[in-house]
Image (tube, rainbow, N blue to C red; front, side):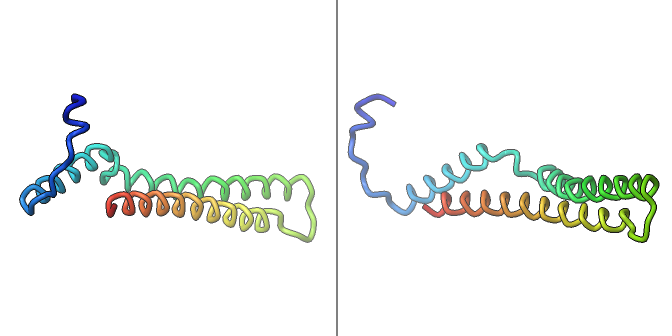
Length: 112
């Protein structure tokens, strides 16, 4: 933009110009957030699934190893499997809340 256009006071928008401006703004916003597609949603589901599965499996494997090395009355496998599942669920909750917060912020920006 030139300096003349930047310093020029804006006229109040009419209904047609307001509608055209809103459509242009939505189009620009959609272009900025092109990654938010179906594939993005599937990727997030995969990320959440793996964030639960990996700690659970690691806990189970460590528990099996401890049960083989140090047999006793307690089941390390069960205890560490539940611990891994808990850690994985907390991790997934963190990712979901982070994404929800980002979507809420995007909605607030859209409303302004």
